[in-house]
Figure 1 (cartoon, rainbow, N blue to C red):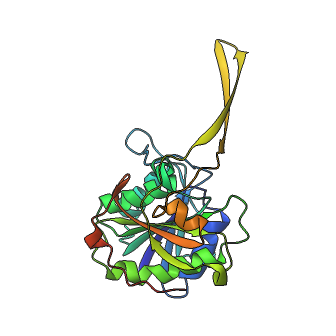
Figure 2 (cartoon, rainbow, N blue to C red):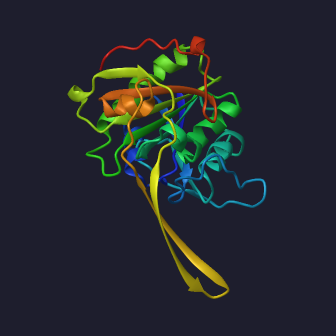
Length: 251
């Protein structure tokens, strides 16, 4: 099977490299990813208003690899329509950090996967819920495990599968849970303003507040040791439960 891999952390991100390494055993893997960090670019695109540089790269495990000076959604669009890769599946990730709750709306990882679904290509977004993860091996193996199950479901090409993996050892993960996006992810926002030529220079640093999570949400699932699975048709619209027919079992 031909799989297009993309992300929002950049083509050199360890999560992307681990994903390619896990998939290369069974699939033909092609990579089209941003040349550098493009986190929180959501579903933004630039291809319609500017030219984007593309650099061919040699990436172990990938049959072809391109680094694009554009957004994550740009990368998927170019993979489909400029490089004519005709993938059976697009996988975006593995993201360094969670993509849960309303943060889904900001996520370049999710935006790239949703771009594929817009073009009727099945897509999965995978995130590891830690900003200093112990490694991407478990998350990449979970992604590999989910590929045939998602593609065999009636959701493939209609809705994207958003996967959030807790940063635990494989034997510590309790299983999979179908989840709803959590309530608004609350951040303690710290701003500083200082005068600059012609205006003010605003600096911001957001720190995630410790919120009480609700059972049944993606945040609750991850917090309690489960892999959170959410099927999304668009933005935060959860797919009809009739699309949730993946055959799941414990790891």
